[in-house]
Structures are given as structure tokens and as C-alpha cells.
Length: 395
Ligand SMILES: Cc1cc2nc3c(=O)[nH]c(=O)nc-3n(C[C@H](O)[C@H](O)[C@H](O)COP(=O)(O)OP(=O)(O)OC[C@H]3O[C@@H](n4cnc5c(N)ncnc54)[C@H](O)[C@@H]3O)c2cc1C
Image 1 (spheres, rainbow, N blue to C red):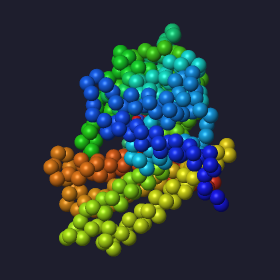
Image 2: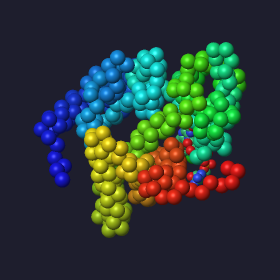
Image 3: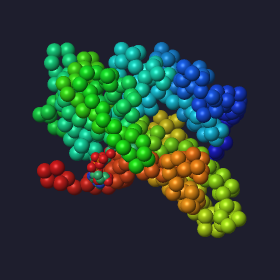
Image 4: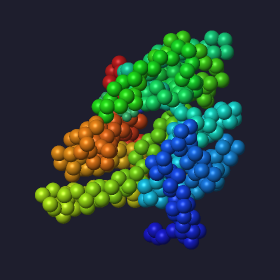
């Protein structure tokens, strides 16, 4: 096995390293905010221009327009994580790839450019009370009236709905069809009359989640992605991209190095945490898991670069990656001792309380995008070929 990069890729890596060194002072978090300027948007624009964001999105939709090269994308992600500089995004990593795959030409032209520049934000209207893991049972209805769909119903746990400009939403358009076949996938602005967003307070103290109510909301029938009744297929394209992003091994590696730094600087009874046998033992166990995720990421990459479906290595990314991130945050909380249980605005918070925040948030990410139990079912049934879970009568 040869894990060395060819000369072409080594030269590309140098190019990325140089770009980061020359421009990192312009990244959000490293630059003072000036009135009227959105640093996130100008940073994203710069990254697109240089091919470090929206790299493979065609230029006609506002992207950089490079040929897909999975190794180059990997090198970019690796170097931005290593330098702890905020990477670019591909717009919305759930919606943009879905539109590129299944959207109409008009939808691609209208939505992809502002989304990849960060000027148009999206929320995901999938879950409903009683329809989370069993998403296909969703009941929000959309009936055709003239040139419009008229939507009535409710969504829940909609991240960012209060601030998003747009929603991609699953609705039931064929109530008499089998549940997976009666769903459609719609796009519409959040300021459409009849939409009522009510924030839900989370244990992090933020209100990032929302309930969203629809009362006679009219959206044009052209808002549909894919065909009527085929929204389940479209939704799964979105979820595939979302899950891949949630267990990112580069983020796990960057977080691991933050823990190493913490252990090198924090002390207990005058002794560096790094010199404590018990903590070092825990660190090594986490390092082993982090490295196994990193090498699993390389397996996924190898399959993708050959145009093959990765199978099991891809299926485990969301489950293992999210659990690992949470275990690392839990370790950091333990390392901080009594400081680890402080929250909110305590003057003794370390790193602005980031570890406490991550510890709470990461529990949620083990659930969001499909819970750990559902991921295990899918790994068992689809990747390992185990017998299907028995269906409960009447469910
Ligand atoms: C951080 C976060 C962000 C989210 N963002 C969004 C968003 O933007 N948009 C959106 O639409 N939704 C969002 N969600 C909702 C999320 O998709 C659902 O919470 C998730 O799918 C689970 O659904 P549920 O909450 O209804 O739980 P349920 O489906 O009721 O599950 C309850 C418990 O039963 C278990 N369970 C259920 N069925 C099975 C089974 N067949 N086998 C084994 N165990 C089972 C589950 O694993 C879970 O532990 C978000 C959730 C979180 C936590």
C-alpha cells in the first residue's frame, strides 16, 4: 500500500498551505468586524475565487467549476483543519448537491449561486411530531389548487428556521398512495404568508430549533424538486450528503489536537494533565478511534476516487464520527475538573465555554440526521446484509 501523494498532489498541497498563510487574517474569527460588512460572505467569495469552496460546482451556477478530484478536495479539507482556519462551504451541503443532481435548470440558476455565496440560507422541514425516525409517515399535506400547492400541517426540530430565508420541505401530496410514494419535495421562502415559526429552547441555552406551522400556505407548483410523489427519493439524496458531513474525520482530528493542547497546558495539583497516567490512557484510546476514523475516511476516498460505492465504510461515518466527537467533548469536560461544569457567563470559563457547548450540542448531533439506533439498523440491514427489523403490526 502506498500512502504517499504524487508530485502533482504534493505541489497542490503547497499551494493550499501558501494560500492559507497569506489569507488567514481575512477569515471569520481572525478579522475585526466592520459595520455593514459580512466577513463570512467576503471570506466565502475569496475561497470560491481560488477554488477552495464550491470547488466542483459548475461556474455557470457561481462555483469554481473544477473537475471533481477527490484527493484535491481531501487535501483542502485537511490543510484548513490543520491550520484551524474556517473552511469554505458548498452553500448548503444538503441542498446544493441535491439540486445539482435532481433540480431543474431554472432551480439551479435561481438558488445555487446565492446559496453558495452564503447570501441565501436554508432550513430543512422534514421531522414532524410523531414522524422523526419513521419520516415516511409524515402528515403535512399539500393540495394542488390552480397553479399552487396549498400546505397545511406542522414541522418540528427545524434547525435555523427563525433566521433561514428558505425551506426545503417534505409534504404529502398523494394521501392515498403507499407512504413512501405519496411525498413531494418543495422549496419556498420562509416569509410566505401562513408560515408561523416558534423557537424551542435547547439545553445549550440557545433556541436554534423551531416548530413551524403551516396554515393555507400557497407556493407555486414549480417549487417542486423531482416529480410529484417522488420526494422520498429526493429527500434521501439530501440525507446522504448531510450524514457524510456530520461525521467529518478532519473535524475529529482537529478536535483531538485541541485536547492534546489542553492536556499540555492545564494542571492539577501542579502536575500537567499530560503527565497523568489515567488521562494519558484515555487520550490514547481516543487517538486510536480518531485514527481509525481518519483511515476509514481514506477508504471512503479510495472507493470514491475509483467511482465505486464505498458501502460499509461510508455507512459508519455519521454514527462513529458523531459519537467520537461527543466522547472527546466529554473528555475535555473531565479534564477541566470543576471548571468543566461552569456554563453561561462565568469569568472562569476556559475557551469561552466551547467544550461545554460542544458536549451538549454533540449529543443532539448523534440524534439529528437520523439517530444512532436508526444508523445501526441501516448498517446492519444495508451494509452487512443482516435480516430486516421485524415490522410491528399496524405501525
Ligand atoms: C441537533 C438536531 C438537529 C435537527 N435538525 C433538524 C432539522 O433541521 N430538520 C428536521 O426536519 N429535523 C431535525 N432534527 C430532528 C431529527 O431528525 C429527529 O429528532 C430524529 O430523526 C429522530 O426523530 P424523533 O425525534 O421523532 O425521535 P423518534 O423517532 O420518536 O425516536 C425516539 C427514540 O426511539 C428510537 N427508535 C425509533 N425507531 C426505532 C427503530 N426502528 N429501531 C430502533 N430504535 C428506534 C430512536 O433511535 C430514538 O432513540 C434535528 C434533531 C437534532 C437533535
